[in-house]
Image (cartoon, rainbow, N blue to C red):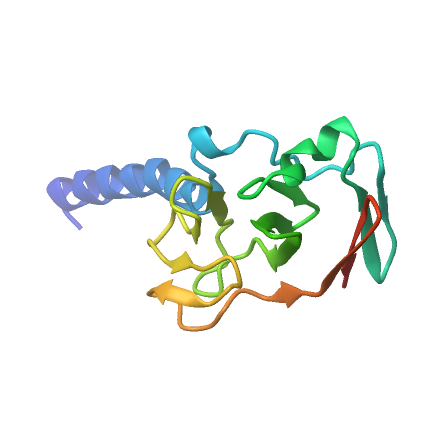
Length: 150
């Protein structure tokens, strides 16, 4: 190996070391404009057990769910008020490459920032590269308590 080859390999290796972490990190980012009330931590009025999540939609942390188009992240689930007293609860993990998806209330669709997949509020794929729907969880609303069955 001559000096030129050594310098080229060192420069290429350095470039790879700089690029790889930023590329891997970009696969989990949610665009800033959509982070809003999408906290993944349990809020007041949220009870999480091994088989269900109960949300008191009258409490401040869950008020986004009181109007059609409102949404909130709980654990790794996007909960969306789809209107007419109906709710959708979907996994926030894209079925294409495992990136974190987000709900775009302006378009009413769930979008993946990594590769551009788009899903409906029922989890169906509208635009690939994803070919499988998002995992859906049954929801029931009794009084002020929205229950998501895991």
